[in-house]
Length: 91
Image (cartoon, rainbow, N blue to C red; front, side):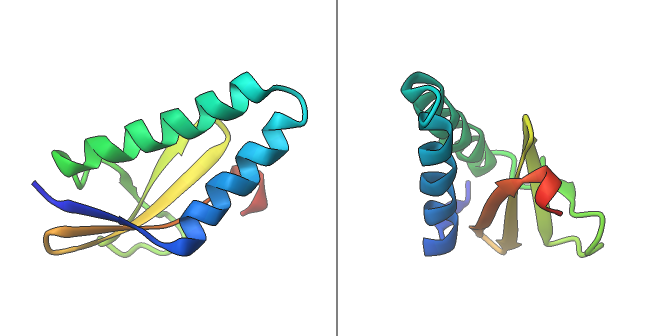
């Protein structure tokens, strides 16, 4: 099992996205945040389950797609660093 570390940037990203969603629905804002954390928690058991980020083509930089959002993370041995979360159209 690996350790998951959230960077300050990734946590700020989730907060910003949730605040944006909350303008229309507090419920969906909470559900978005819960889903992101739940999906990332699964990486403890399956760290390579995300796909390699296509534009970077580096085995250690991966992403998980959640709806319209990309969760980008890096694998470093027994550590996963969640780097950023952003809207896929921002690419």
